[in-house]
Amino acid sequence: MKWLKVILLLGVMFLTCGFSLMVVIPNLVVTVIAEQAPFGGDQIRAWQLGTPQPVDDSEMSDNGSGSTAAGASAVPHDGYSGPGGPPSGVPLRGPIKHDWAGWKDKPLLGCEFQDPNYTNHTGDDFPVTEGTPVYATMSGKVVFAGDNGPWGSLVVIENNGVQIWLAHNSSLNVSVGDIVSAGDVVSNSGDTGNSTGAHVHYGIKVFSGPDDKYGTWVNPANYFSPDDYIDWPCG
Image (tube, rainbow, N blue to C red):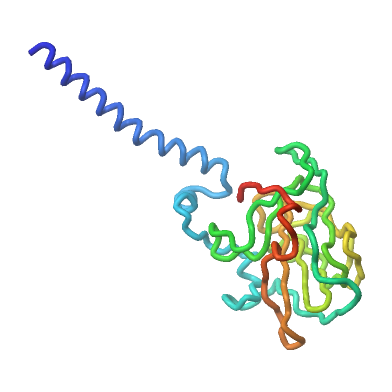
């Protein structure tokens, strides 16, 4: 009987400890991730489950794809056509020094177009140290340069029915009306507007014709290759 009591006591202790670990460890993991992610509480749980996150103001305000009307931050079709082809490559050049990742030969690509953790993500996000030069990926006319609410300090370049958007800059090197060439430094990366950390939001819009005022967002990855970047975690 004495050995039976010992066995039963050990069994109770094992079950109690096991239950405690089942409760403590998941909560600890959630806490640690929540402290590192740009959101917490219900949002972190939704993120863990792959649930689409609410669209932030920057994406809601100017979504030419038709899911919501363009808002105050919209940059209408200018109609400029000049020399130079469609966008090519990414808006950053290596080698690049990152505060948290050291030197990298290529830009880091984090959140991508239509990332599943967002209801609608209209471009690609390149996490980068603030102040890093940002390059035009095509020649064209600067049709917007300045503060644009949730987009922060924004540069938009247009040519032959295509716009490129470079958002969340810390400073700009161009003004509206400037004609730039592919490879020109047009701004410096930053953390302005609706942003949770320094990065370059790179978007591309295509216009179907002169009557298409706001265009449609397309995947920037269609205009560059996997050799142009290094995969990096989103968020």
